[in-house]
Length: 243
Image 1 (cartoon, helix red, strand yellow):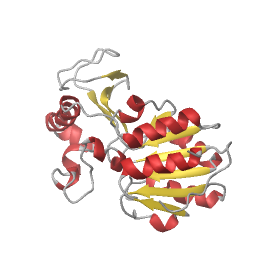
Image 2 (tube, rainbow, N blue to C red):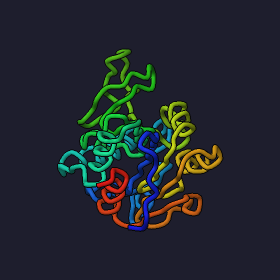
Image 3 (cartoon, rainbow, N blue to C red):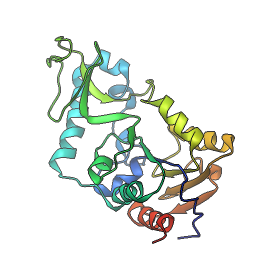
Image 4 (cartoon, one colour):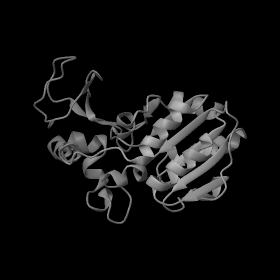
């Protein structure tokens, strides 16, 4: 690994993670040539319009994704565990903002976490916005325990055309951070792809990209390290902690 710029011990850190950090745990990415969106049309399964048009098809897609994650007994990898270790040992706040809807970060031990695109293992009611844990199949016949109406339950994930979750909190953290690290992201999906530009505009935080290969916005980062997430993330964290 190239030289790591170490922040002050009291530096506030914001870490953005994407599909690349979970790929080595066995989950497919979305935008690779053989990824999910190369096999299924976004317009058919990942928009509010798709759910209104054909909710059975949308449920079938997400039921398959949820079941696959559960039946394969997939586990957090070394990159997830390294970030949890950083949060536990760093003297100041470490906030992980993930675009992923899996549960690897929390299972690895991360507690200060924002799922900006929601979670697979939850259901949300379109009628009353009630959110509940959900691990089995979901259908149009399920009844919301919040409002008692059937047909409104959907996966609690952010679809294309919808606003990501907790954006106000994320923007406040980016404005105050001293170090911004992007891990395993393509740099194609906004608003997350614009986080590095926001940090640079404010002129406060150091910016770092950790990725398998340069992202679309790689030139915007002041520092970069490339390789497998399970190798470069633990090494980077160890360098920050002085190990």
